[in-house]
Amino acid sequence: MPMDALAPVATLPAWATEAIVGAGRRMDARGWVPATAGNISVRLGPDRIAITRSGTHKGYLDETSVMEVDLEGRAITPAKPSAETGLHCQLYRLLPQVGAVLHGHSVAGTVLSMRSGHAIRFENYEILKAFEGQTTHATAIDLPIFDNDQDIPRLAAAVEPAIRAGLPLGYLIRGHGVYIWANTMETALARLEGLEFLLACELERRKL
Ligand SMILES: [Zn+2]
Image 1 (spheres, rainbow, N blue to C red):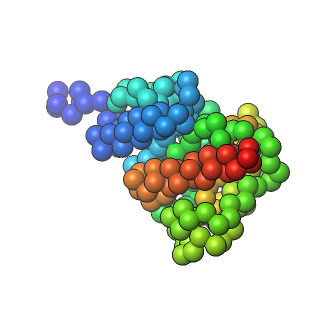
Image 2: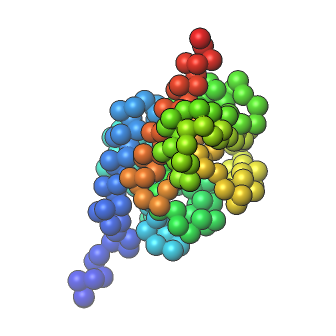
Image 3: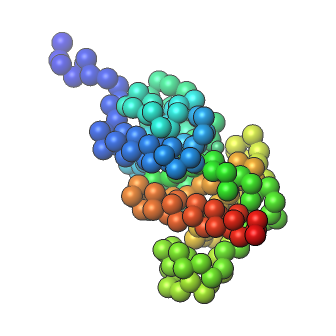
């Protein structure tokens, strides 16, 4: 029997699991993924991604916490994908340059989204310059808010036109959390950090 026949069906590359495990620790350290909230993914190829499995705590991930799915969210690794895998797959399908997607449930994002209409407007924050295409702090950028829905295909359909039109900051689901993406995990984490800083500032500002 050839040795290959004994190999696992789908072994995730070490760089992918390391990127996801590292992102999970960083998001947990900042308090953005309480309990088993949130999910994290990276693109493995044109039609495959690696994503955190359902029910995993993002601060304690290891290689067994990550699985492979195709861009329709169908499991390649024999495991149960998280319900929100479909929202990750949507971003990889619509935006071929996207290499990493992050989703967290922060206090600021949760609270602000419950007290805002269809968007949160950020204006005059220096950190806006950290986002692609922004060269001055004196711009107003909207973070759109979509109503939460346990029906993920229906939620994805509601978000899709905005993704196609371009979302400089990502998007927020009401009472739930943010989705942000970038070409690399490093850039996605930097953008999430920038966005969570904006949300935290805005929450403090409204309390004054
Ligand atoms: Zn969520």
